[in-house]
Length: 221
Length: 304
Image (tube, rainbow over all chains, first blue to last red; front, side, top):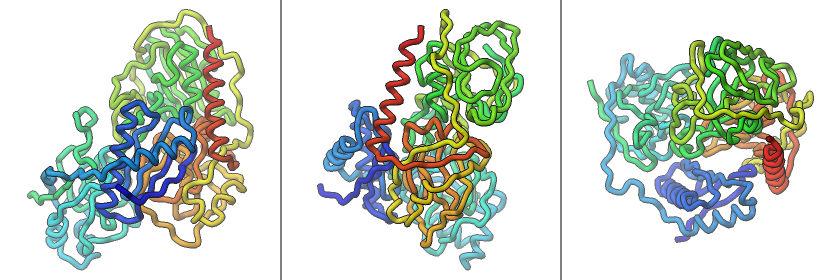
């Protein structure tokens, strides 16, 4: 299956594979298909590290004591040629995340309403009306980038990030939404909170949300 | 076994890191200076990547609760002589202080048998952002008990060469980054400038203070994977070089990527240090990495 991608070295022990330059489920499926292929090679004992998938690219680290850059590039090319687009969504129903919107749980809800010219109720309706796709995990353990947020809710990040965003906070920025998986600084707009535990390394599946998963938010009192 | 009397600025359990969960947003972490970790570990008979204590900028003080064999490598924080194994007797106290200027900022204290904390996701390293690993995902504090997992080393070991002291201005070698082509002359200005390290001795990255490398066109990029050593260019033009605890993905362009062999140098850079960059090819970078690994193996093989 012919897929367009570009390979270039990233430092002396990784190769960056770029499949596109936009947030697009088709491109993202290719990323995750390629990631699965590299992980399988890693599991077979080939000198690949766990690769890092993102919206439209894959960063594939390798053991530079065992592979030189030319060898790594051609080996990766071969792995990618054999990769399938992974249909990660398959038959899984969307994960439901119950959210308490607004008030102390969503301190930015009113400001978001004001900035978008909507009422808070409309913001909640719009946010909870969409089934989102988890494009990638990053920023913190278990933090999933969900897209795409309805265009009417699009806002730049806050001018001043908060020093402390409580874990479980439901947030928006740009055309993305996410649930903060641990208490960290953060610059997104906080519109609600869930009691679900997004990250627990003791669980068999430590991250509640996995790449490719469908997610929806459900308002709760 | 050691009891922490005073924890220092940031003392955490670190091993060679946790590379398997980067696709879940888990930083690889581990020792910011893996060479010094390997040295301290070799001196007490541990494998190179075994869990040890990493002390940053200002070291910790300990009371010895039970006899144990330890070794120290990295920056000079006093306390114990670096580069040799030492039997500590119950009742002794050891005090590590502020790192001596010019000797680095991170010191490794290895215990024979390795530090006894549970493995989480395949590693004993402390993941501060996720709050797991090491001592419950946090820095050490007064009262913590540091136990070793295994047997003692009975012979004294001493590192054959004196630890190399970094020069007044450190040099870090870099290869051109994936975005160098669209960043105009940013790479050339990176290597042409004497930078001062800003920040607070963070394990995630170091800020470079100097002339702003501002781009003529705003570069917003989709978030994508990054590595230890990536030289990122945020909108304010002050480059950030990522370290062991870096976030797994970033949204800034990469001017260049520091070579793997110079990660230990990066790990010993602290606020106020001067650093310069020099370009090398990837082939040369990989050669330097292999040479560094071979040198370490050869030296470890000579230990009794």
